[in-house]
Length: 299
Image (cartoon, rainbow, N blue to C red; front, side):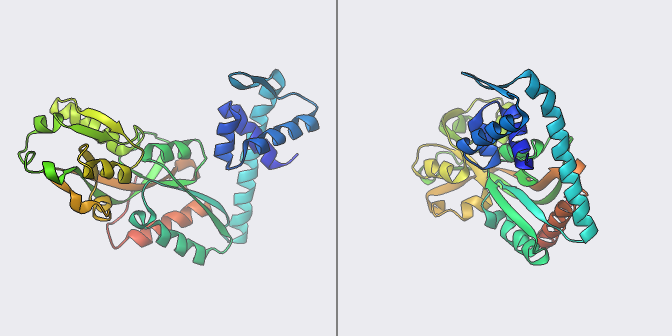
């Protein structure tokens, strides 16, 4: 029995679907299936029932899943204690990015960590703010950059800076929309980002504040796709000035001058893991890299 087999067992039990478990484990569905089969053969027990709706734990699987989770937790604690005794920072740092690396300065942070801690490995993945926060809560990520607020009390964060978030309109529409009148914006189609994105929540708050309902005609996954709809005179959208200024389409859109929101950019982590050497090193590096921009505030 190997720890990676137990990790697969726990992941399949949580997800109930092999493909989702494979995504979280960064492996193939066939590999997940093979590991479950190997574990069942070693135990001499059937751990799952394969149903049309997915994988369902058997009575034996239910009885063993909690113990498997405890073994994995004990293994992580043992590794951390060993690293602390060695005085080194090691392991695999799984870092979630909600923006291009240059905007987050994540390449500077990772470069600093790589030089200081040769035994540390890195795994970077992209997702919206809501998606990476979910990854933190499920322990699929060790830390993550996100914008906006986080209501999960188990997640702590260091605020690194604030991005200016603005309303962008096609340049050809700018003259018609120059007045500070939200009703004019309401009459035009909008492009919304994923509901898991902090900008989606911002638009929802704007609608409630102004008492309006926007025409969410298009929905996309990220800002660079959204600006294409705006540049093509198809919709209005919101995005950060940092993203806008770096876009090759910036000359084809205009910023509506009557709205600007200061959106916090933070680095999140689980509070229960805050003293782990790997996370302490990451937070220290992030503070140092961002020190010239804003004073980070832990919360």
